Length: 214
Length: 263
Image 1: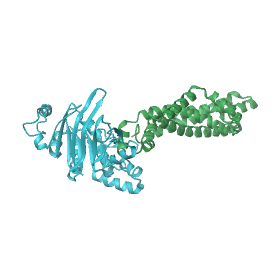
Image 2 (image 1 turned 90 degrees about the horizontal axis):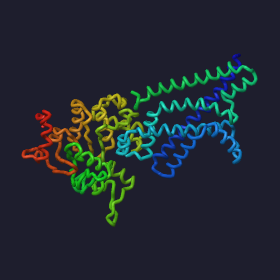
Image 3 (image 1 turned 60 degrees about the horizontal axis):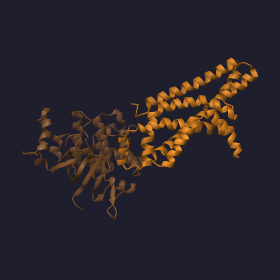
Image 4 (image 1 turned 180 degrees about the vertical axis):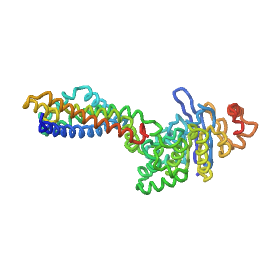
């Protein structure tokens, strides 16, 4: 296999990295909002969060992406496939991350919230300055795991017409008839990216002060 | 205004059918150290937590510097919850020190002490940290400002927790068994900080098993047993013989452990 082909795969992997990173970050933000809804004590918000999480955890990402891809034009929304891909991945990972975070929020010791109450923090301040940082630390390993899953699941966004690593590999196979070399190379690139993410995650766990860290 | 910083009136606390506090009335004089002692399960910690509204009493009322805490009574004499803003205002006069320190693990000592100054009192970072350093110096930990709680000993953590409360300039400090999680040596350093605080005239309410501290630093001793306040007296009276029979029995358990020299 020529360097030229490998370079094309590497270029496409940049799209994989970009789509995954943006989706994971948006997903994390949405997951924190879902957690806030769960903790708010406001019934309709809690129902919405529960419904959202069970729906997007209970249906396959591929089905969600296809649904989104076909639904948006019907309701008159024309957006680039890149945006469709990011919306689909973000919403799906938000549901999983919210569920991971739930355990983290439950693990925040009551005493730390009480000391925030006594210091005069409002519930919103306590949420963002005390609960969220501690919950994130407690769930960091699970969040890193989710990031790796999303990096791999991003191969599904080819169905909305985005050319990322997997789709590029398929295209190259179609024109070169070298499936073994090309798919093996694609797999190798996924592996390297995920090893970097896993290592960075472990470093972060070790260095973050507070729960788990030194 | 009366001379009392806290006034507890006919306080009742029930968990289900269990009565934890049974009609407690207690006055906490301003500028003095009031100690709540009694066996485990006597309700002393619950009483203290009610004084911070961390526990909601079932009945009765508590006044902090004359202002109702947690609940207000409307014209018809019906009890209603205070608004969150009002509660925060009354609470701002109280500092609370917990048995488990409850420092925020993701912030340094300096971060813990300055957080509320910045978020609640809306000070700039430099000003808040300067004020926080003053408090850390006061508890002898200015050289630990950059350490995270997990890098500090229990005694140091508790002193940071005291500094964190003091930074908000409370009128009253509540201590919930502040040394129960510490070994005797670390207990000493925390009690020393509390002694100097008492000497400055801070109003303090201390739930403690340190009978020696209660006897020497306390101005007022309240003895609880099974949710009832058996008596409130000056230590010279409370610990002088003849003692209240239940206190006698309670102190015997200390003597049994060979602590006769301390009592």
